[in-house]
Length: 122
Image (cartoon, rainbow, N blue to C red; front, top):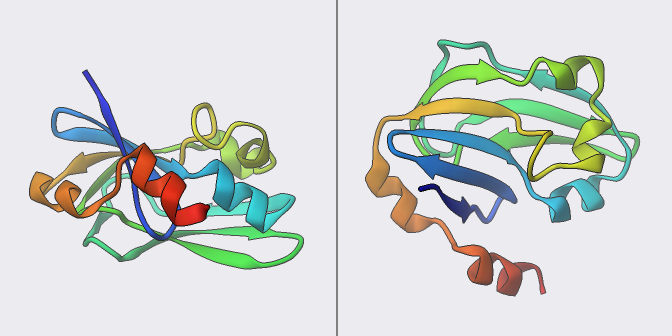
């Protein structure tokens, strides 16, 4: 079973055991506009909660991606480097950014559920 959480920085994280998938929300993709570039971190990179873990650029702006929890990157979605526009098409599924190993699951408690996130962006 997996559970999805949301950060105030508009990232989502779907957790299954001690691993998770991270991406940007549909709301974030809509706010950015046409996404033209994704600069990922590398597999094996470790990060703390709130650390900058990549950059997404659109025709309007560049935006850092912030880690919703502490962990280590297991895999970056290499397909997005060649086709960053996928982030506009399917940001909360096929256009995930990273698969990670979570270091501190207690940090998930500071994130929002779907209803909390909907209230944040309303």
